[in-house]
Image (cartoon, rainbow, N blue to C red):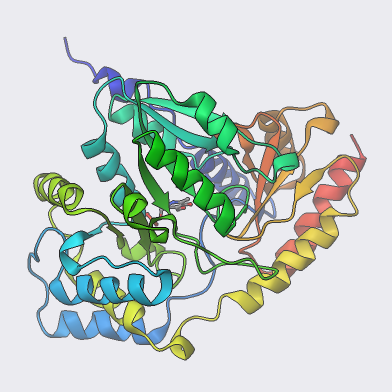
Length: 388
Ligand SMILES: Cc1ncc(COP(=O)(O)O)c(C=O)c1O
């Protein structure tokens, strides 16, 4: 019989893509749309990065590279980890993949057997549960709330650990909540990981996007033991506005790196050759050449938060990192899907329903959009909620 594999039939579709597709239809019918669903910055990739990729093309750098990335890029990443994160990964402890998403996918594939349990806090990034299921492992969420600043406690973590638990997925700064774990909180989590003999995948893709004095710490920098049981994932998508270039990477113990290199060599082979040259320019860049993300994002964040503050019946968590505000719409007596669908159909404002992140009453608003869109979108949101 001709049919799809079971593990693929059960995959959920992306809520973000569904909302965006509907918004596109409405826009084509002439409806003015304000899109708060974007998962990327609206800034262009800086010129010096583009030039490096163009030079690579001109020089014929268009062939296969080593599967885990070119040596110069791995050296630059090794240096970046040392300089910015206090991590000492040698170049042979680094893999460059086709985006941080690809790094995460490959890591979960090589670390999990069927039936293994993978823990992560909820609300979570949409792809975590599906990646875990594709490895035939079992996603186990640890619920968080605005009261706990969307952070897990070590007591909660201990309660969820069973003999089948293999992995903890951590994401700080977090998408969708914008929470950022402190040094002490991460240290306490590291102690449990070590004590319970687990492995940690630390997704640090939003590390450079921080507000109100928040600081980013890499959990793998807290000593030898946690370093030996962590993969630190990062990439250039968010920090340098390079989402389309598809370059992510991770540092990890050698046994993990070897397995992922092997896995990657049989699936995608190397990440795109000229994108690697662009990423090399980005990672080696002088601080002052780097895209100044923070000033415009701070301004947009402030505007969105102050406007949200005037809307009754919507509660929200002021994010300390990333570029999303996670709101609770339970007081409107609608769940997130109904709320987001009605908001789009009635006002043309696109959001992502929290259902996609494991929260039935959450709505994610991205402020990586223009100030005028924030003004307009917030005006429509307020009118919608007040008219309910
Ligand atoms: C939490 C999180 N991790 C990883 C990624 C993947 O980033 P990349 O574009 O490098 O694949 C994203 C992108 O939205 C993200 O939000």
